[in-house]
View (cartoon, rainbow, N blue to C red):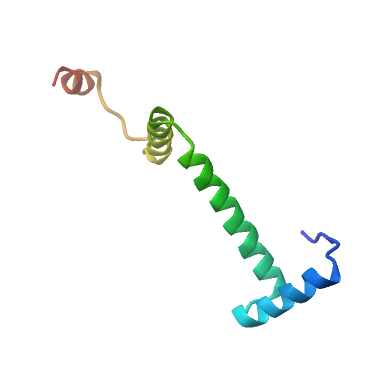
Length: 83
């Protein structure tokens, strides 16, 4: 998808210089910068979560990784809960 954005000349010059030092295209540099910003914001949001919210998020991530075709019968679950 192609989108045109307006960037002032000073910022564009800085992007070109940085992209030359990083051996990246300006487009790749901007994509890298956006990814870095999003990851930073996600980490910042995670750091501000309570311990309970972190545990909930961790459980959610584990549930997303679970194999949905792997079935456990009722007796196995009850045995685990009894331990």
